Amino acid sequence: MDNPPVASPKIDLSHFFREEYLLHRIPTIGLLGLENSTWSIEPTFALPMLKALTEYWSNHPSNLFQPLFLPSTYSPSLKKIEVEESHSGLQQSLKFGVPSADWISKYCKQPSAIITFYEWNSTLEKKIINEISDLKKICSQISLKVHIVFFVNSLTATEDEAAINRKFDSRSYSILFANSSFNISEYVINLEKLLIEGMSVYYKEEFKRIKKKMAKQNGLAENNVYYEMKMALICELKGDWEGALKLYKNSYVSILDAMKNDVTDDKRIVDLREIVDILCLRMCENISSVELEEGADLVIEKHISSTSFTFSSKSAAYYCWLAKLQSGFGEMLDKLLRSGKKLTLKQKHPGHYLFKSAYYIIEERNLKYP
Image 1 (cartoon, one colour):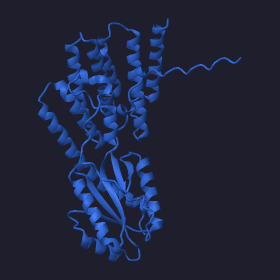
Image 2: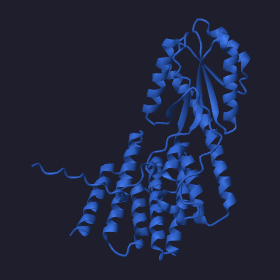
Image 3: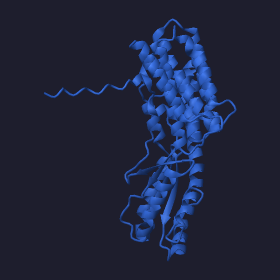
Image 4: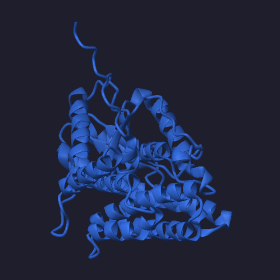
């Protein structure tokens, strides 16, 4: 008789951070109208444009944008993502908790600018104008920039472009034209320049909105962490690594001080340690991005030295903690490299940290199962 199947061992999630805390943050750009399959004027141009947009923004060396192809029924929500559950019950240890992994994921997927594509058709002129006007009106309420690309017939391009310019005020609308005579690769690069401008406006307003909410709280420094982490995320999405690093450092110092002032509450200490671990890893990524003299390795070492007092001995829990830190940084560095960043001379390969993590897991197992 065959032996019964052996159940696969469960993965010990205590050795891992949620992926959302490790991801390299990339802004999302909404692409609206490219799914339209009924174009009659330039059907052979629309599909190559769709392919070029997808390939360029997915494979660009600096991975500036994450394209999101929106359905024709898309309408931006005027309600901001605010309601969330705090990570691992951390709400009990801080007044406002920390931004949850689910909130981070949702926020990063929100478009920071939109490009909407239309085939110009004079017989549908009124419908097109109304649709664009409605979309722009909604988007302007949340500082979301809309760029409009019109596909025009290459044979009548001059006349069509003149007609469109008469219908739309260039001071209020960002209008671009495209036809089959264009070089698609060059066209996509020019679009990117406009997107950076629109994205900057959106994140600037978002940063001000969250900073204003933080000012209203007027509480302890440690309670500002919730808002500082959100503002740091916005800085990362717009490529302001130094701004993000400053905010993460502020939060890190606040939580570390709170830990040192309250060493009697074991549950609170564990929660706060998890928060400073996350903050440490975010600091490390931003240091790697701006290539500061103080390397990420040194930050990890200082962090371990500063927080090891929360363990009474080099127990199994201590080695589990070290393994989690090393695997977290190794994964984060790997994701950073996959986004197009390059290792500095001071930076070790991600495999180095994953190997150290495996070593600490062995030490933990040896203590658990001598």
